[in-house]
Length: 488
Figure 1 (cartoon, rainbow, N blue to C red):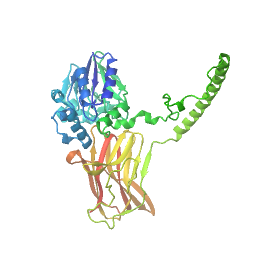
Figure 2: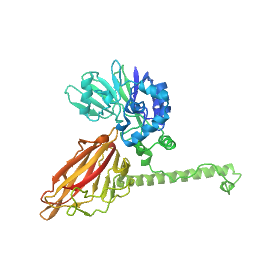
Figure 3: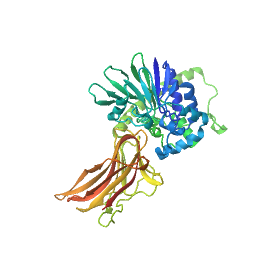
Figure 4: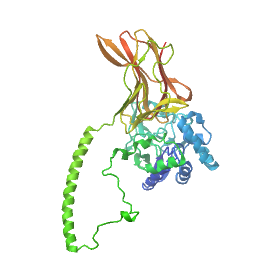
């Protein structure tokens, strides 16, 4: 038997239709959906109707649970909560009853499915790192487990050594001595750096798992968002549109028929002698071939030069001067400048500098969250770091300072962010930068899912200036607010 396992469709009708068509071409016997049919996307009712008609088994995702009243909307970030409230208005009682009837897990003879972790499916815990998978393995004894939730496909393995490992998505045949937890990825909200849907096929006869990547109509999805008024912020896979990396070969021109007499053909012979026409065709074939060869050579050389010298990095830098001083700062007041209003990506922010590792897949902007300006980092590349930092603050040895910031990760974030204090030391008359003096990972839980990074320290004897830097390497979206450096 061949089973298609899909997850996290998130009301993306264009993606679901493309995946469903691909499934129908794979000789599939059964379809299982691992939850989150709704949320984020603009077509919850249409997607639910199609899933109800075409999918054999469905488990309850956290977005499904909040829509049918089984989960508190306050547990979600602001963007997700706004779309959840809108989604509820688009669904009738039949949809609510269908979602309310869904189970948390599905157990088959050779595998088991749920939306998130298996240790406590109702808690919707994230399995991101290999050590996160141990709780699920300890709770159930099935060899093969499937889940979604993070939108990032991958394989967690546990062998005879007892040490869990993670592997990137790849087709595999099961080995008797190993256990597997497979994240099937997302149909409607991919978060692995690309803009294609992802799902898995289990062949129970062969004990094998294969992966499918399916493109879908990004323009139609974006138009549906605009038509319904649903925010694009949650659908940051749109930033990974592969067409953005392909400059047009020729300038845009219209191929539509003429719309007025003035646009009709002029100075055209009504009759052409056949012999003359043959000679002209031959001449133009030769000229066209020569011209094409010249264009190909020029394009190849130009392309190589462009590829060699292109850069994906972007630095948005404020005038970098030591404009702040801790000498005259009042106790418990923020020494650094904090944005007072939103600022879009690419616009400089006074007192701050941004470093984007890959401007095609990453961004940093200042947005409003809970009526408070927040720095929002978005990344679709876990291998490429991004950061932002304050201007320098002049200090003197012996000062007691406190650095502080609050972080909020969106659903499915994979990777980490930290708050660092960097300082300039005066050693033998020369300045030396120490970027690792204090690096603090957020570890204090706050209301609304925020995590705080905070540490108080004494300025060392040879320090002349300091600055704060937020560093991150991840996929997803992370918001940072209340960044401060205060004198104690």
